[in-house]
Image (cartoon, rainbow, N blue to C red; front, side, top):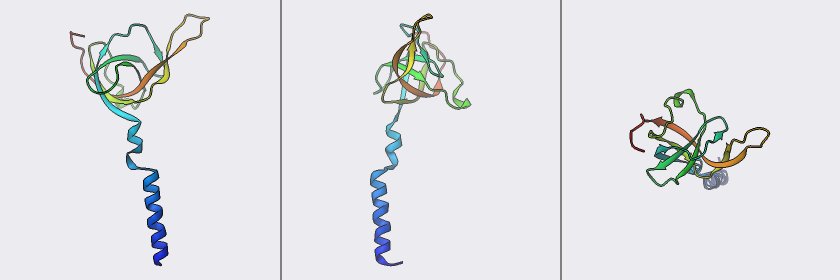
Length: 126
């Protein structure tokens, strides 16, 4: 192989590495941990359930919508007083709704999508 072809391949590799860094996919979901607190109003989420979390880190407090994942992550009831860990998406999405009795239209409510990895047993203090 000639030197020019080697330089073109090397240059192409660096361009691809600069445009598509390895950590790019990790910027979407961030780790979190927090205690589940009661929701002030009932919410319905697409494919999952809504929880409110009192964070124990840098994540913002608010409503989080659980994204259904593999069967491995479906265990553990999300009840107030439990601690939950997992990944959350840093941008809220309109995945939850405030239910309105028929014939009303549900009101979209922004929530942070999360993928849960673990839930503790409920504690007595909220």
